Length: 245
Image (tube, rainbow, N blue to C red):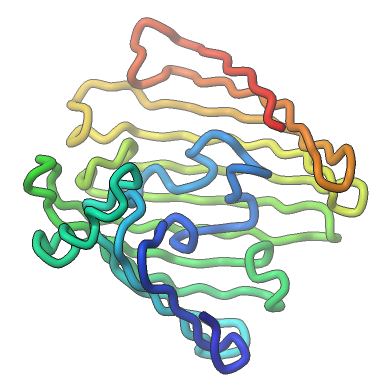
């Protein structure tokens, strides 16, 4: 719900925190990058869908603060269980974000923000508490170029796949922004608290081209290259080829 001419907004209920925590202009997995290192930050211990609440307030025309918490044990396969875990187990994922955006209609494309998060120990799941911080910046130039840089660090807790990561890349819009050519590069250091020590740093490259064929249909050829995949020590390079429609 948005109030006061979009100066105040809130969400409450069964939520997906990745819809609004550390988002940026190329975050949509249905239209932008497929690999999750370029969408939801791999250094944030974001829970699955569950009970939660978040509030966003505009301090000025461009400066905003977003804060909230959610059930750390959210599980989308059993959504109603969150009503029990939220109130009885009391294990939460908390977040606060401060950021600056351009005009409201470009708040995702013109955005710079800092996000802090912390998650409680999940006793039954056997996952330790964790905390971390991420930074994200992207800006739309000439209504075509959308370069981005994103970085995250955590203490490795909360079950995060990467305890540190840096992603850079750009999107390039064609045909009045109906088509998108995008390229991204990510470096990541696997979490020793999640997977154990001794794993190699992992590098990910992804390139895609989304072609809008007709009014309600598009296809996206996609190529990913995984260099030193951390959980596959027997391989140095893996290619992943996809086609999204």
